[in-house]
Length: 597
Image (cartoon, rainbow, N blue to C red; front, side):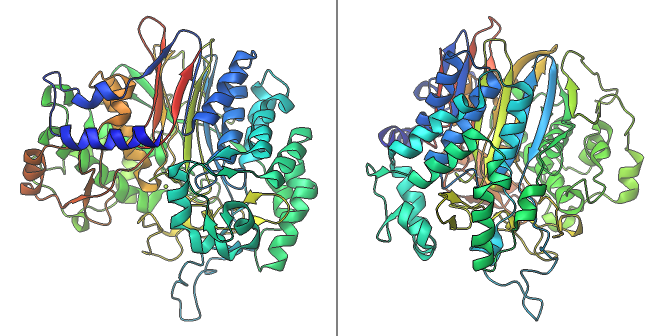
């Protein structure tokens, strides 16, 4: 797999500026999608994909396979996601699309200024490293809730593959070693993390075997009863470790944790219904907002990666991320104007600000005023199809009258009945807080950094938040995770998601456009070069091999501050072809695979 990743990067370096006449990238030939008639799993690691496929072959449905894949990722991708973190799940079971929030939450002892010193200044790394950085984990509660409602196979069966991986171990990859080296000092500073993830303080090298016996025993306890994580010996171990290390999570926090079914955010793009995660994720809102801002523009005619198309995308991103900074937060604590932000008429209004020939500086792009949003509030509109159970009926087609790198992990599952799961989960930054709870093997998240630590202070991904995302007990931090399901005439069309912090929304956007607008296969769609703008800082990130020099020169001429950076994101996607077959691909930037049967 490391050889393939290197070949991928080399190939794109020598061919990055060669575009076929059909506007499909020439390197599509090197990223072949997987096709299957029956069912498919795509994830960030081959062993996790295999675990999901095995469950499907045993007669499990998409939920069963997603649980198995998620737990396997928790074992083989500890730097990205795990049972000590949380996330979001989009499901299409039959005709209903639902969303589940199992994101981490602030402990009851959390306080607004907990990461500030006596002078009101941010204490370096306090929200990123150590026990104080961890929110209450939700992964096990979320998986158990989804399985209880929809799973076919016994819970023990779907947990079993992860137990085996943890108990028997697996040979780590070059990617794992790269991630561990970047956090070597942090991992070595925690005795339990040092014992598992290093050899006397040295990160495991590619090919060395990672065995996690404590985690295997924890998973066995979870297989007996998932509530053991929140009320049993596992919960007691977390509580004890927190008390001994000045952390905030208590046994009461764990016992009180409940995942939440929420109404998905859905919108119309061309002939497709696009449903994604609602707040406390910003992903769905701003994915829909940007698609609405694109509106009826024929991007295919403009040309793939043409200056005019990219200029419109970047300026649409700039507006959306400005709104994100002001209005997005936990809907249980603050009113989030979702209805207005995803209204196509609002997007059309904001599009009038875009000069097709000139980029705006971000300081001149302001979040919408409350009075403007009030004009476009359509809370009663059937397009949102709100309900207390968090359901969107994919059999109905609504027509508009108006025109957190590899941190975090995503997986996509489609079963033979075309039930779908699109799931993104995380421990936030690499190896989370760098804290393993002794005796459990559980690596804790550093998700508290996703709150606005102080007004105007960016998080580790450079995102700036406001009052709506301030810290409060029991509150869920804002996220960019964007697990997405697209339907056409009520039938499954595409499922996609990605890791990458603040770049998640724009990565999902571009994969979606590559498939639906530019008619690429999913292999080409996830491999294609990416562009990203998030309002602040005022720069446009581009992958160094993904764009023609003349295109970048034209964007600079229009005033865009172009900055090349290393490739980012680790997307995967599955689409249904017109003949009913499934086509899936995992991002060659990572080491994942898509497999069907």
